[in-house]
Length: 344
Image 1: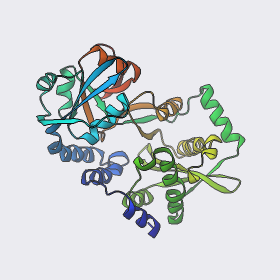
Image 2: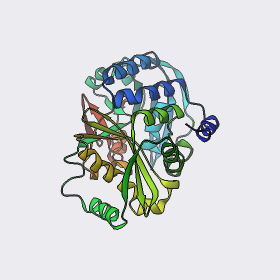
Image 3: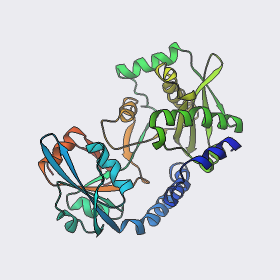
């Protein structure tokens, strides 16, 4: 891409080797016939990193009680889940490394809640032993005959009405300068507006791959481009990996520019003969605004084959109560189910 993207990437925090490898596998895994090989490569590369993990411990005050939490594995994979459950965490204490393949040994950890980073090849062993398998992310997919639903909810009906009211239109392009505009003026500003410094942004290499294999859907109003989305097709499946609103403008968001990017792209996909859509990923927790947005479109959560997973042991009623307030999607073989604090 252009010099501006290179400068932004040079000033961004360095990506880990693991993150760079995972990014290389995104397009092959989600939008190519090489998906099985790419998923197998991802799991093979992750295996040595998920055999042993350091023990971390937190003591969390909740109301009048105390919850003891143990985490085993890399903090960058354990802490996001714990942060969602408990909010900001104090610095943990650390103990010796533990094996991440023996659920019986980890159950003996003296804690109300145990969160262990486990490899996907080990996850069935933990699930059979009564552990929850919580993915770091889930994907949202659906049949284009049902997305959006024929009878939309009141919320979605109002969203679609705004698209018509404001006269949004869509055009398709693959021009290099349009990909640059899409990244600089839409994707990056919206990601930073929503997530700040923690925002995930595609690398220059990944943007180039999207530009090589994908199509841009630019949303205009009154002749001005105000939003966009990109898509990559494989057979009768269409993956929508990125979208953005110009300058991350909240007024455009309220006026329906984001809805237009999805709705008009889906109309194009149906006309092109696609049958299924993959609208990207969210976190696993149900009380997530982006999850609610995807659900009302008729999209359904499915396991993400590239997502890492945590095995979670809920040892006490105090820990179960936390999940009753923060229900989560857990993997059940090839399916997902909701866990909301019920006893195993």
